[in-house]
Every structure is written in C-alpha cells, then in structure tokens.
Length: 131
Image (cartoon, rainbow, N blue to C red; front, side):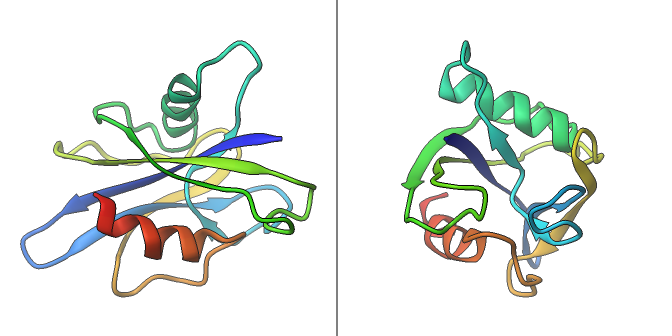
C-alpha cells in the first residue's frame, strides 16, 4: 500500500506551527496525525498529496514538495505501507477545516505537539528541518 502524508507549517511571529488532523477512523481513531491517506490508482503522488490535504483540511493555497519516504515494517497496523511525505509552508491566512475522515484539523506549536499516531512523530522530527 502506498500513502502520502503532509508536513504543513506556518510561521508566526514567535512560533512555528504544524497542521495536524484528529483521526476519525481506526486505526488510531481520536489520535492526532499528519494529514494524509492512500493514493488513488489513477493519480500521481503529488496529485494525491494535494487531494488528501484539501479533503482533510481544506488547505489549497500551498506549494508542496517531496521531503522523504517512510516504509519500515509495522509502521501501520493495517499492513505494509510506504508513505511519501510532502511538505510545504503555508504563506496565506487560509483556515484549516476538517473534512473527509478527519474529525478535527488544528495548528500546533512545533514545541508543544501531542503524541502522534503511526510513526508521525519521527516523520515530523526528521522533516521539519527540510522545510
């Protein structure tokens, strides 16, 4: 299985914030995670990233680029999953609004993150320096 996950940040005067979603479905229902999901068979990876970001958060005004790939066994309890992680910096004041399978969408100070689902804590730690 192939997925995309997005590390989206916005810079404020005194902080940097990252966009997270609260999962509405299992696995990790009610846990915070990066926006993302499974690619559609007819999509390119980048098209899938933009689609998932818009579906789960409403964010559209952003330029995404590939940051890294994650595929360790056991990273997803549903089975072997490889995720291509995209990232971008939101430069507008566009609000995040939860949709699709995201129960909530919210901005978190990168220094005060909740425990994240899957291996998203590792992804955030490694990818923030790439943005």
